[in-house]
Length: 55
Image 1 (cartoon, helix red, strand yellow):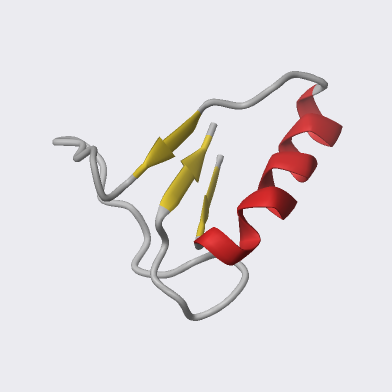
Image 2 (cartoon, rainbow, N blue to C red):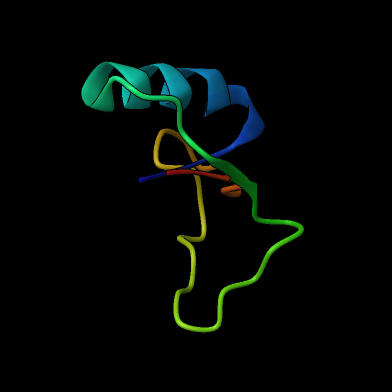
């Protein structure tokens, strides 16, 4: 699972495919809210806000 900004989305997708050999689901965190999980405040690769969940 990766939480990334738009700039790092492609890199996270590539990493997911390399690791799991399957296409990930991509969730836009601006459109979806989870009641039991709070996403990290920033991208895992930089200090920009995390926008996408790659699972």
